[in-house]
Image 1 (tube, rainbow, N blue to C red):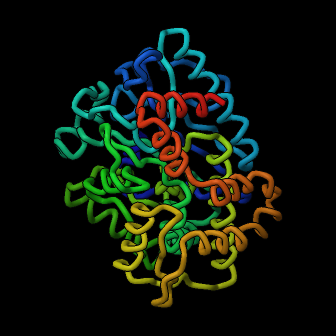
Image 2: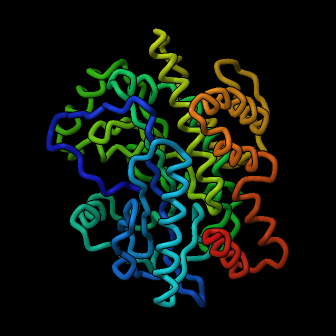
Length: 377
């Protein structure tokens, strides 16, 4: 979903000062009635001070976002996410509410959700109308700190190739408004209705990025760069590259594993930039096609193994990517965290696990109860 952070007023200032690949994580969670397990418009009841990180509103009143502070790595982020999940679960339980995490709610209706009373979100509804109102989806965003704006552009360019595999691994939304969609990530095509989403442009360098952002701001179509909701984007004010392609994860170990994988991939791309390598400029239409295949089939389909024209099993490509990232995870001291990705490959992603639960009795309430229990665990 769109993030609520405010960008600089005109121009693109930056704070790329992180030398240790620091990470920050945002998870969008469901606020539920503890009995019916349907969504509840109750964000204002959930906002509270927490020891670490932050609990924030999102576009809809039935959604809350937990966000870590900048962390040294995935293991510290895991501790903060565990504390944040526990805090919101306990606060919800005291008010007859519950918390769940997945890419979509299996049976909730978007028509019953209220918009948060914040100017940015009211303006968003005014601009996008139905497109924004029906955006009842839940994602996770991973920020990785970098120390140079040119490096951030290079990393974002290189990360475009990995977006389909990250989506396939994280796919966790096979149901929508009470029905099976036939997709592993229904969240992706719903969000695709927004402008300025999906695979981002390839930027030549930092100056090219700034010129293009300034042109859009001067044209009056966006207020600042935070209105670009691409699957990966530089976030200059925070000094990070932000990866936004992934569905919300039910199990914390999967969130942490994906964070560790993203951090390792950013490190690999940053080191390639330092060595003078330029990311390949793969055809946008093929990156977008791979992204669609990943949303449709999750880990069970075949992607085009760019830059070749050959197709290969998604699971095999994901294992290859994990093997390549593991060396960087070892250097970062995060190999234990990245094992959460191995669990996704060995035992299935969130969408596959949801389907197993639902197919047992064809009971959406039972499925939602399983999601709530696993979210709290």
